[in-house]
Image (cartoon, rainbow, N blue to C red; front, side, top):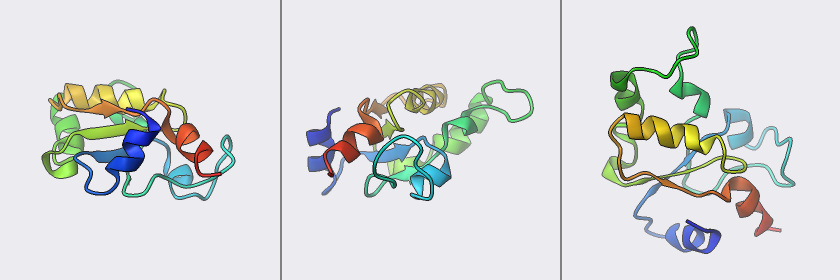
Length: 118
């Protein structure tokens, strides 16, 4: 998925955007890397760290991941992004383990998106 497809898809998107960054970055409170803070319109926040158990550091069970990702997007594919495309892959993997086989990745992520907003 590339910038133009994401931009065009915002009106009546056939997918749900999922931002893997922490809530401080998602909400535009803190942005240590990119020149613009915030998130792509219509995105929901699912920090990538939530794919692992906080106590063990291991990936959560299939059941826990299904509870986390199963109902997101009301059956639409989940389009994952983060700051630069790396940590979105953790959510992508967690969704796969949860049985979501239709997830997508926006590899340009927030860095690409905000570069087009200047």
